[in-house]
Image (cartoon, rainbow, N blue to C red; front, top):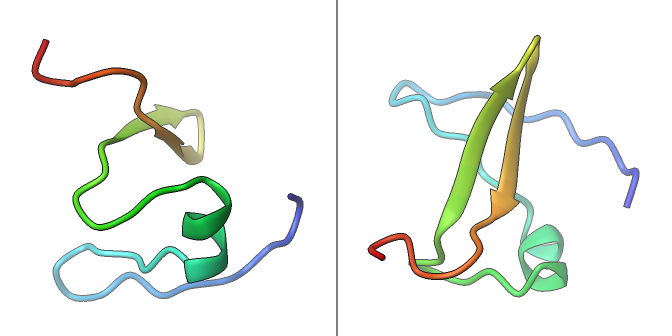
Length: 53
């Protein structure tokens, strides 16, 4: 997937992830994700395993 979609950050710092992306990655409401900062990028990935372990 190499589509680029521009989104605005809302007043609470949130960004909406397009539904097509969520479906492709099998992410639903309450899914755990990992957020990493690398240089000038924010990388959101599907979390591996239980984050409460």
